[in-house]
Image 1 (cartoon, helix red, strand yellow):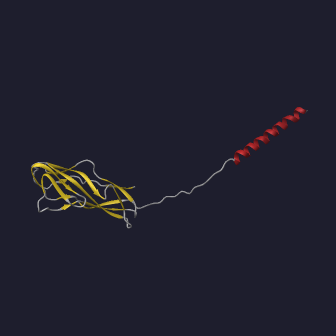
Image 2: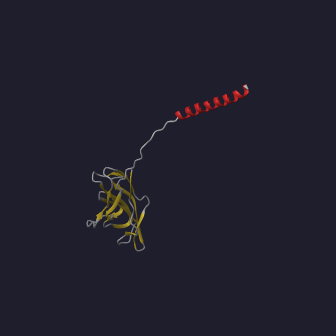
Image 3: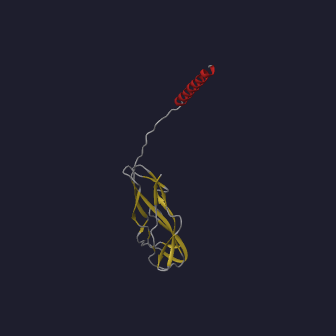
Length: 175
């Protein structure tokens, strides 16, 4: 008889212990919540305004280079002569637009590019920009970007109008 009373008592104690443990486990949990947000901004864009032009260049038997800065100044070294009649001289010019006051990075060509006249070639290298490497859009969300480079001219380079077969790329991206 005692045995019959102990079994229900053990079961009752076990059930009570189980309920106490469940209550302790449930009260040990806690939570927090957070809002989800996103801000959509104007995409950055770049538009060409003016193509790069090194102008008129004269060359003798020795090769040389013409350096065209982003500000539009040019200089010649080696066998290069820059005639008084300069022709059209212009750094490449772009307009960058996007969200006002945002900063952005500038990526210029790193490998030399070729300009051709029939079967004759020259290379253009050492691209530089103003602003250099990065820029900041103004309060209206725009900034002018100029690009200069170095024209590598071989000695006795044949005369003619040299043009790139493909335009060079300037890449801008928000920081």
